[in-house]
Amino acid sequence: MEYELPLTLSRCTESVGEEIDLNRGIVVIPKTHDDVLTDKQSINYKEHRVKFLSWLLNVGKDPTKAKGYSPHTVYGTAYRTAKFDKWRWENCGGYSMPPTEDEAKAFIEWLAFDYEESETAKGKLQEGVQRYGKWLQHRKNRDEWEFDYNFDSSGGNHQPQDFLTREERQQIRQAALRRGEIPSPGDVRGEEKEGWLTHIGHLLNKPRDAINADDWEQVEGWKVPSLVSVSLDAGLRPDEVRRASTQWVDVQNGVLRIPKEESSKNVGNWTVGLKDETVAYLERWLEERDRYDRYEETDALWLTARGNRYGSNSLRRLLHRLCDEAGIETANRKMSWYTIRHSVGTYMTKERDLAAAKAQLRHKNPKTTMKYDAVPVEDRKDALDRMG
Image (tube, rainbow, N blue to C red; front, top):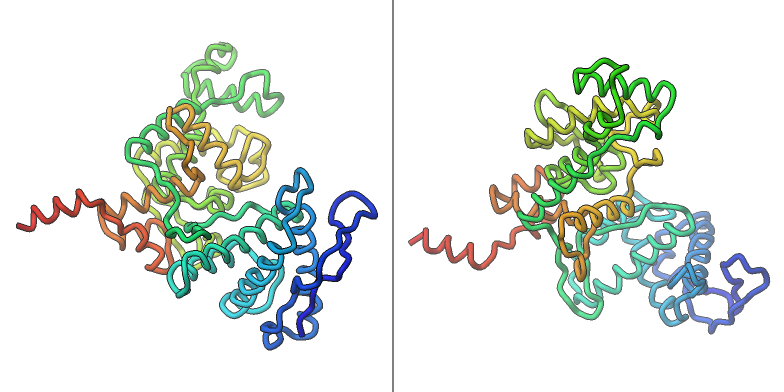
């Protein structure tokens, strides 16, 4: 049976006693779910859904201002997110709550290739999924969800997000090199400072007691250059940057080896080729990495200055800083870490083929790679000329 939100609903804010009156009709559990949920699962699902839909009504539109969506909007979102829930239970291993980013990405991919409805319908479903992700981000401190496809709910076409041009890729590499720096001598103490003195002395071939402030400024840091260069080669997803381990790096063979259990898609072990300069950056970074106290008890390949693993937001901020430094315009462009990934798919397809792009980007479904098979008209004309 369907379960609806009550007529009077307590607000999901820090205020006490505030309430909002609603017209009945916002369905928490639709009848279509009767055949897929046990009694226990229904109780658990109802608990999560009431919290989620209440959050949308009260603060979901703008959590910083405690501004919620209209009951009409939440009514539609309730049905669309319930559809998403049923799909993932049937396609991703059975009942679970709350949804995960991987399940959301799989659903969006299904919309792109297998859902035979209008672009508007796809866009509305994606809006609902994005609101689920927004709730989890704000209420449960989850990472922001990002997708390879974005549908226009007003009827536009689904397209990959913006990608970097060849020139922009080179500009980003150069900007990353300029951001490579090590801590100043006043920022480190004790054993960490002793380690840096040894490191600088080794690099500059100077005795430890002869190292001065100018020497500290001469030594370059390799965290940002290695992170950016690996991502430009491997098209790392934000989740893969977060999970990246020193054990992935095979300097001798110039590759990343991503184990199945660590892959964000979790579909198999992947061996990803790297440019020689990227391997050189990684070698230098791994040596430098040992000088930071924050890496003592972790095998994380990269951490932020605060010792946290990178996430979508921190990577987006880094990319925007690099774009600013490189003079790359970001206005009216959807620039996230996926922008780097899409450039890898675009140019790997153009330079080699879809099979190479599929392997480099670690796609399970060949259909996912097909979006990069968009050869410009000029290139197709050139091909016709060569064909005679």
